[in-house]
Image 1 (cartoon, one colour):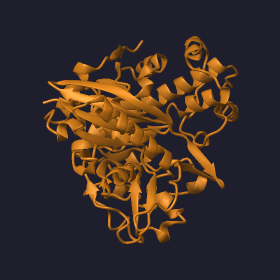
Image 2 (cartoon, one colour):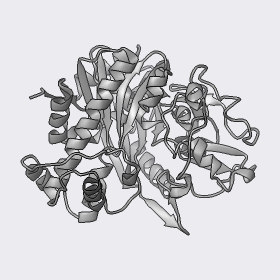
Image 3 (cartoon, one colour):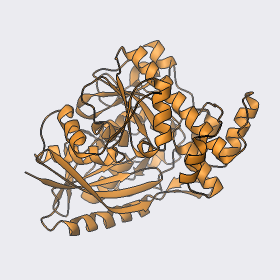
Length: 443
């Protein structure tokens, strides 16, 4: 059997709809629609333009259906985590979802004992902290995370996909259910029933909508082309999500101190990882300079960089990133990078070292040995970053696939409709045999 599915993959800066075909152990994808996704500032608050996103999703699904006359077998949606829409009692959206980079959660602090309950690294923009600053909460009947909101608009059916729900801070990390303790004080019925990857989420124009790993990192980890379980992964895009795949959470005081998170993965796995600020630093620099990347990367290979902490909160908001990097170096006694190639090299050196530290900490805290690091996502195209990461980690780096999130989305759908079978290891075999990969050895 060959399945033809549509994967809606929404990132923080762009979205796309891909047509995926899976059968006979092979996987092929075709991008049918790509569109920008940027925040909109309104009356001092940073929002997502979710109605524009929905319009683009509909356009992409129409184009996907036109490309395959036999019809789609499934549709799946993934996106970034933590952000949400609030519905009123009639099911109408109360307001445009707020962007996680908005300043409304500045100053948030985790309560004592929180890590032992939800297992999450502290991020001030996690859903639970956003709800503490949410003026519309008293008027809300239900909360839907972004992929669940779009799925609801397609199907009329509501639910909360598990992998994304674990990023809210409201799931008990041991039971995998909404925590009665953590949700105390929220309006009754605010959180919908949980779905798991592979569950039916309704239908759109007669086509099944399938719950996938709707947190984009959960889908990306499905498509890590590992040949065994002794791997670390870096899902490298706007953020670098650096970690290992486990069967159970790590909730030790040392894990909490190292700011590692335990998020739900596909097939009951745990994504044990640390967020690193990622290529956001480079994206914002390029936006400030209004220039392209290719020539700068060639010059950066021979430039002298400086090292800064990419996870300093000063780098979280949009704005003049090069000036902030220079100011950070100035304030911390580091050599100040002056030219654009020096700033780019500083970003890549600092990210490579942050990747190294996260991989080393993941092994130390989880007890899991790592023999290879897989870089997936858009960052796998950045040859200099991949080589610097191999050098820093002292481990081989396998780069690709760049479209890991969409591929993981496609594979979970294909398994749900019977075009592929088996556990994650079998899905990863399909990726290895279908996608171009590049290997970098430490120098």
